[in-house]
Image (cartoon, rainbow, N blue to C red):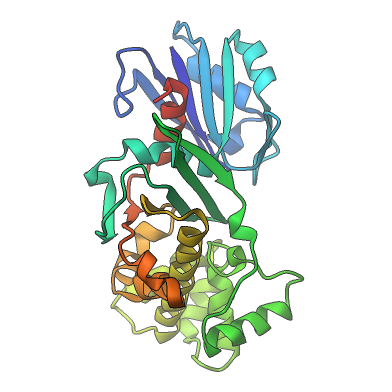
Length: 327
């Protein structure tokens, strides 16, 4: 019997599976506000309270790096250790996966309804697969075929050097270099990067910030939903927000293409994270795929690579459970 979880800074989702469960139909599943608890053990105890499930294994996707079976959760004062979880609940095994590694583990079990196709392409059987996920940060991972199944690997590719594609992006790089000691893709292609693009386009004088938008951003705890909503609202024209998303998508497409070249992802590129499903109209207007394929002499290699947006919000939990079940 398996306990699987998706552990994030905002919420923690836990589910229990037995030998007859399917990935999409656990025996029980609950979501907890992470900030209300001082440890993962406390959440698990609350989850199991009153239920006598004889759990013998656990696997968790966690929002943070995992080193030697230990993880510090981003945006939470939690430190999670595999050994401590095993001991606390008398388990045979416990596994911690970086959240991108968990998402990558879900890719082989995703179905057509979980995906939005950006490029149908022609996947190569057992070809390597890349995963890129603009969420709060920019996560990247990949899968390779070991002869019998796909094996997922984490990566810190989101922290590689940002490479501008045109004069606009060169100006963006100069703008960011004046403010940051190292300009990575994460700083311009993730939740933390969207406000940077917005500020660059505003401060450079390319677009004017409307007073109503300035006030809305001042009142918001998180500027990203305001920017996205203003770009798509239709109630008020907002060229600044529209240009922000267009620049964001072009940079994301280029980095997805970089990932495809680095792991030779002939099996496909999967775009995950919280932002892409919310901006599908801009992702699907051709801008993303143009930047994805724009690789000079190697553009022809990228043209047949399938590209999908993962729309299933449960993908990290699916991946943690898939890993725990050995699928």
